Length: 301
Image 1 (tube, rainbow, N blue to C red):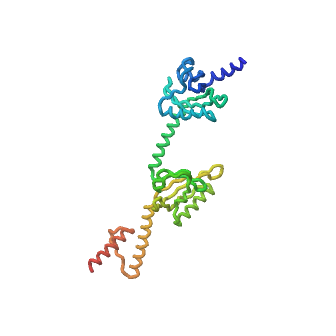
Image 2 (cartoon, rainbow, N blue to C red):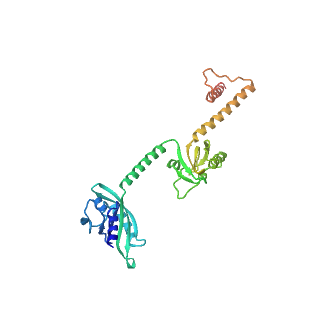
Image 3 (cartoon, helix red, strand yellow):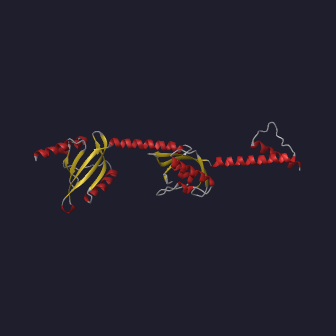
C-alpha cells in the first residue's frame, strides 16, 4: 500500500502540469510542486488560500460562469485564467472535474493546469499578421472568394460584399445566385465546371452580376481549382470590376461601326472624306471631322 502511494506521489510531484484540489468553497486542499513554483509560493502558504484569484473583473465573470458547471452534470469545465506570477502575467488553462458524493453533492474538485502563455502570444501574433495581410489584400484592385465544387460560397471578401451590396447571411449561398440571364454567364459557368472536372486552370472570363440594389455589374474572373488526391475540393478566385472598361470597349466598337458606315456612304456618293494631315487617325479623329463638317454645313445654311 505504501509503495502504491509513493508511486502516485512521485507521479504527481514530478508533473510539469499543475495539479490542485480545492473545496466547493474554492479553498485549496492540495497543490503539487509545479503549481507552487509557478506562483512563487510554498505549499504551506497556498493550502487554505482561495484558488484561482483573478486579475480583473472581466476574467472573474467568465471563470464564475464556467465553474458553475462543476456543480451540475457533467460536473466538469475548462477555463483559462490570467494570473500574476514572478515571471509576469501568465495564462493558465485549467481542466477541472468534481468528485461527487451521494445525491450529486460535490465533495471537492480536482483540476489540472498548463501554462499556455506562449501559445496565446503566438496566436495573437498570427492574428495580427492575418489582419495586416487582409488589409493588403483588400487594398488591391482584385477581390477574392472561394466556393465548393457544388458552387456554394465558402469565403467572400468584405469588398465583394460591399460592391455587390450583399449583407452577411447565415448559411452558405451559391455564387450563381448573383448572375443575370446574360448569355456571357453561361460561358463563364461552363469554364468553372470544366476546371472542377479537370482540375486544371481555365482562362479568365467575364460575368454579369446583379447587385443587392438591382444595379448591374460586370466582372472579370480568374480562378484556380484546389486539387487534393486527384479531386477538386474547392475553387479559389479573384475578380475585378470591369463595368466601365466594358462600356468603353462597347463604345469603341460602336464608334468603329459608325466610322465604317460613314466611310462607306462617302464612297457610294463619290464624295471623298477629306482628312487634314494634322487630324489624328482613329475613331476620335473621325468623329471630330464629322462633327466639324456638320457644324460648317449648318453655318453655311
